[in-house]
Image (cartoon, rainbow, N blue to C red):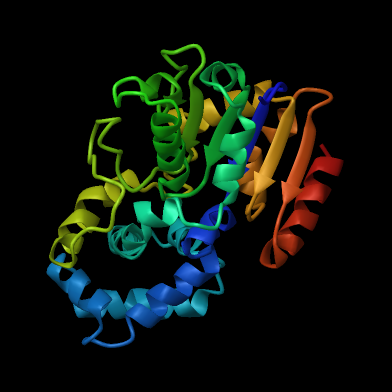
Amino acid sequence: MIKRQTVLILGAGASMHLAFPSGRQLVTLVVDGLANEASDLVRLLRVCGFQPRMIYAFRDALQRSGRPSVDVFLEHRPEFLPLGKTAIAALLTPFESEASLFAAVPSWYSYLFAHLGPSLDDVKQSKLSVVTFNYDRSFEHHLFTALQNAFNLPTSEVPKHVDHGTSASKFLHAIPVVHVYGKLGSLPYVGGENARPYEPPPTDELAGVAVTIRDSIKIMHEGGGGDNLALGRAAQLVGEADVICFLGFGYLEENLKRLGLNRRKGGCACVGVSIRPWRRGAGACRSFFRTR
C-alpha cells in the first residue's frame, strides 16, 4: 500500500521498456520514415491527403531543427501540425501491444502494481496519482487489466478503481491517470471520443486510425492554456502531493512550471529516476527546484 500522497510524473523513458521510442528516437523514426516516396510513412501520409512538397518540407525542417522531440518542434511550426500529429499517431499506435504488457520479464508497471497491496482494499487505500506526458496508453491499460484479472472484477467495475478523467474522480478511491497532452484515443472500456482497443491497427486501417486520433494529441502550446482541463487536474494533483517522483522525464522547464511544481506544498519530497539520456535534464531539474 502507498500510504503517502504520491504523484508519478511520466515521460517518454517510462514506457521504453515496451519498445516505445524516446522523444529523440521518434524524431529519427519520422526522418528515416520519410526518406523517399517509396517509404511506408510517405505513402500513408499521401493517403491521408498530404502533398509530397509538404511532407519533405516537414522532414527537412525537423531534421535540421535540433529539437529533442517532434512535439517540441511542432510547437513553433504550426503549419506542420496536422501532418506531424498524423505521423506521430501512425508511428506510435503499432507499439501498443497487449502481449508486451505482460511479458515474462516483469516491468516496473508490475512492480508498482504489486506494491499497491495484496488485496483490493489495499489498492483502494493506496494514495497514488499518475500524470503522464506520453501519448501511449500503456500504463493505464496495464493497471486496468491487472486489476481485472487479479481480483476477478467485471469490466464495468474496474473504472471505479482507475480514473481516466480530467476532473475530480466520481469514485473516492480511483487512481487518477492524467494525460497532460492527450493520448492515442480513449480505451474502449472508458468510452468517449475516438475510442480504440490497445492493439496495433491492421496495416490497411492505420492511415484511417491516424487521422481519427490525431486531434486527441495536443502539442505543448495547445495544452498550455487555462482551458486545458487535463493540465489543471495534473497541477491540482501535484499541489496535493507529499511525494513527487519523475520517471523517464525530460525536465523541460516549461512543463515543470505548467504543473505548478514551483508552488508545491512545503515538505514535499521530489525524486527523479532517469537513465543516461535524461541525466543532463535531471541537473536542470535540480537547479529549478533549488531556486523555487
